[in-house]
Image (cartoon, rainbow over the protein chains, first blue to last red):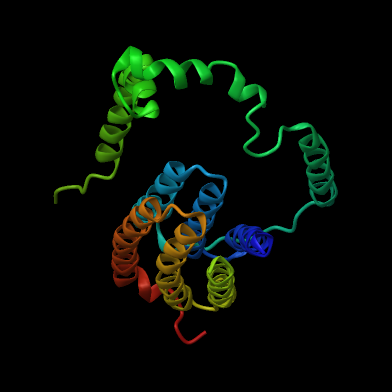
Length: 176
Length: 93
């Protein structure tokens, strides 16, 4: 019964992505992309990554729409209407073949939530068993972000701060 | 009870698909904006029902509250954009 919902979700996801490419003006594309991000957040939630789903729902479908619209404010109205060209035959032939190749190689991936998969037997048990004793933090994700990878987080914050300054400078209203 | 919530989930998703038809097909931008606003009302309920099915309601209520708040900001930005640029879109088409 869950499969009905999941297949329905994936079909809606593909339809939304196709609609975002095929509409004629940029504002409609931006609107449909916001809903695409929301469906993607549902897929993250279904895969068990609830925090990623939260970020995708808030940033991807809310804030990204606002930023795209701020960019559209800076363009002339005639630039936001797109003239589509027909897809070349090599793309129509090659992309389904690429998809089949990806499906074929996905056979070798470990199953969803497999505790014996290579990604979860390397360093994860060390963090899970030792983090409370070493860092005195009950939340494992917090201890990894703020303790084991503190320098990484610090530089990441600096990068985001720089990007925020750049956005503020670019989107600043000019004084008359 | 879980079967009931799954049934609710699938019904809401089918309702969203109806709105999505108008969003993708809709001849004018205003059809798309109205369709997306309709979708967002369904989406808030959908997130809470998913939380009930996955038995993590506390987390999903947070997601749906955040989505509702930021979606309002997005709707306001779209309205502001259409206020200034809406004349270039042909309403009668």
